[in-house]
Length: 191
Image (tube, rainbow, N blue to C red; front, side, top):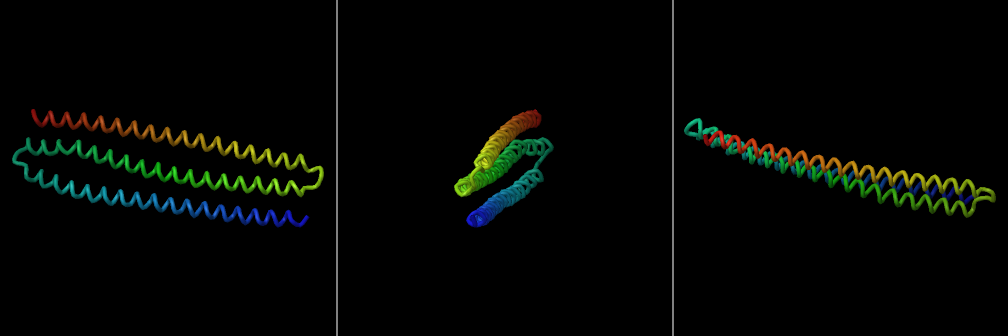
């Protein structure tokens, strides 16, 4: 009879250890994502500064207004492509970090569910006669919670996929618009 409180105590300890492991894992993944983001931003800032300096030198060296506008127009496409590349890299970092979060959370939830089911099975072996309906209700509740989690997980994955698809469509549209604007600017500068 005294084994049941000890089992709950051990289960609580295991649950807390599992939660700590999850939070540690998520913290590590967060720092990795932030580190990638900082690297991306530093590299982008460095490249932008170098490009701006080079373009400023070209603009200052222009011999006439037509050359000035030609140099200006020629920068639209590379700038749009760099912005597009930055957006893709940013989306990749966000998607990768999100996927790592999902994977870590799923593995911890699966392990926690396994432990809870094991505890319920162990406690039900020592349960007094007549408590079968209570044990069955607990098992049903656990099963329903797992089904709910799986549905939320599927819905979340679908939402992430939809956001990624929308982002890719927006990036493609931005790229096409930038190409058209560059072509129009080049045509105007040539005329």
